[in-house]
Amino acid sequence: MNTRMRRAAVAVAAGAMAVSLAACGSAKESGDKADSSGSAKKGDDIKVGLLLPENATARYEKFDRPLIEKKVKELTDGKGEVVYANAKQDASTQNQQVDTMVTNKVDVLIVDAVDSKAIAGSVKKAKDAGIPVVAYDRLAEGPIDAYTSFDNVTVGKTQGEALLKALGGKAKDGQIVMMNGSSTDPNAAQFKQGAHSVLDGKVKIGREYDTKEWKPENANANMEGAISALGKDKIVGVYSANDGMAGGIITALKAAGIADVPVTGQDAELAGVQRIVTGEQYMSVYKPYPQEADVAAEMAVALAQGKSLDSIAKDKVDSPTNKAVPSVLVPVVSLTKDNIKDTVIKDGIYTVNEICAGKFKAACDKAGLS
Ligand code: BGC
Image 1 (tube, helix red, strand yellow):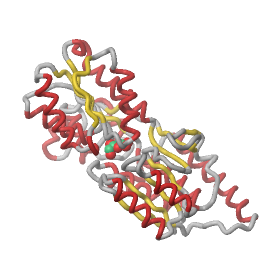
Image 2 (cartoon, protein in one colour):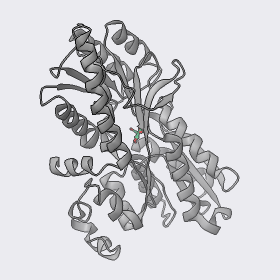
Image 3 (tube, rainbow, N blue to C red):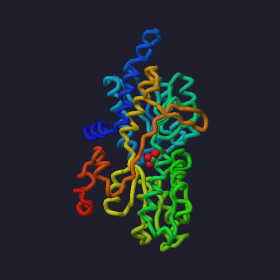
Image 4 (tube, rainbow, N blue to C red):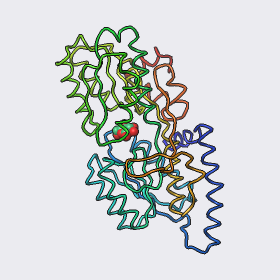
């Protein structure tokens, strides 16, 4: 896993490489300045608090956490430490986790919020205690210092465009079901906005749901409801905001005897990629996690050391509570059967053997993967 992730981190796009190189240069510069001004700045011996929102979606424990830990070590000559907490979908647990980290005097926080509004008070507490906050993947409200994510409206557009392409002429023959993410997650609203901007007027949306806590079982129950409300012969496709929910949706489709309807996803989870190989799922969105994780680590280390973010974060994003937050938004790629090799395999996210293990071997052979 480490070797592969190292390869993945090395395989980042030229743009992001430029970001990190530039970051190194300027970090030194402002560090020198800080030293000469005599203020007591932190060195490499820093403590980074990392808070992730849940562990039902594979990405957090499999990619985000280990990638951030690795990059923090790299940037601090092995001396920096990451203190980790996963909120398991509970916003008040996450607030307590922030409190604990503030009490334990971490030097900086990286927060992927369960609920972007509910976290605002904790962000303020951290700031009041002199601890800078990087909003990770989801734009937390409150006085954050920096933000990194993917271009989330584009994620939704990419999903919508792929669904229309898969539907072709069938778009006129029936209705789709839209399964959006959790209403406490600002990304879910952006995915939804992007998808609607592409789908509206092109296909009839028979039913649409916001899925409580992004849970696959909730998506499964909503899909069962949609099937009985619309009728199993009327559904021509499903917009699913991520792969976890696509799993629950596909289970409901199969149970109702519905086959061959395109289902979208996101995250390039191993199970999602395997369903793409077998044809049960049409697409996913591949988000190069090493790029996002590296930027978050760079931002956090720079902030903890009192250095400028100017060369790391060229963009500015407004949150509902704060204007012009220094930001980096990483581009995404539509993932279908045709480009599995050129994306997740090429970037070292998965090996062919992992994807094509056991019962997936035959489908992999057919798809030209093994
Ligand atoms: C992330 C997705 C993830 C979802 C559920 C979103 O904020 O961007 O990658 O699938 O949350 O955890």
